Amino acid sequence: MYRQQRPLAAVSEGEVLEMAALAVRCSRRLLPLLGTPRPLHTSPGNPSARVAVVLSGCGVYDGTEIHEASAILVHLSRQGAEVKMFAPDIPQMHVIDHSKGQPSQENRNVLVESARLARGDITALSKLSAKDHDAIIFPGGFGAAKNLSSFAVDGESCSIHSEVERVLQDFRKADKPIGLCCIAPVLAAKVIPGVEVTVGQEEEQGGKWPYCGTSKAIQAMGGKHSAKEVHEVHVDKAHKVVTTPAFMGQAPLHIIFDGIGSMVSNVLKLTRK
Image 1 (cartoon, rainbow, N blue to C red):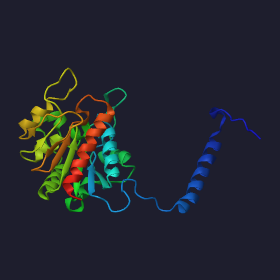
Image 2 (spheres, rainbow, N blue to C red; image 1 turned 45 degrees about the vertical axis):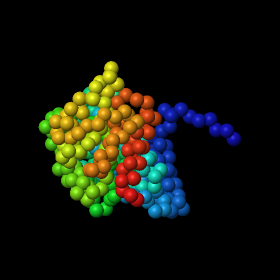
Image 3 (cartoon, helix red, strand yellow; image 1 turned 90 degrees about the vertical axis):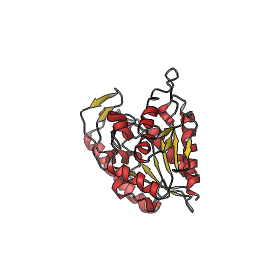
Image 4 (tube, rainbow, N blue to C red; image 1 turned 120 degrees about the vertical axis):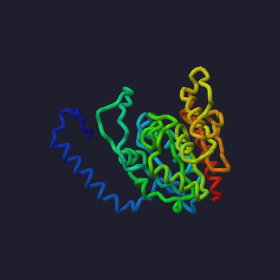
């Protein structure tokens, strides 16, 4: 017989606790039947390449740009890569209330926040070794300029977090490809002398490229800048560094997604896997 639902306000606290306990009991009974779940970011069969993805928090204004991270993971999955995610175990520079665009009086940890994007499957950056991976990729977001470096505050005079600098140097010395998008190419420009990267166009073009000044900072740091559109990539074959503008420019999401896909494809191609 049909049972009329009661308003949520009419449900007692005791009933809520009882329902929660029932849900936990059901999940415990189902898990053994379902078996051990396969890791979400590892494709079945023989992986084409083992790729490390370095995150910088969760949220465009104080961490990793979520759409960029998601696009990278989707394209890596589609091409059969085995992915491991890492982040430095450090405090965030600050926390931004994304609904207001203003700093919030909170303290957050970069690794803990990055775990949101990684669905909990993440490791401290200090444990990342180039010998265990065929390539490394850095999504953008202000976290790359605030947590992985001090670029947001110091510009061309910035410092790079010691673990970020270490892994970039290790992958470069091992002649293994490095992919970066959005603002993240500044990390390579600071660490790898003479590297060629792109963060988009070098003129604002009526507001389409609001962060175009970054190209001048890259050149001041000793890097070389190549002007590209959002859907394009720049491949520095000598240093095996692949970059794409992503959200540095104003463009529809699917165009940004395609540009990131091209970056991922070129990184995997350089692994020769």
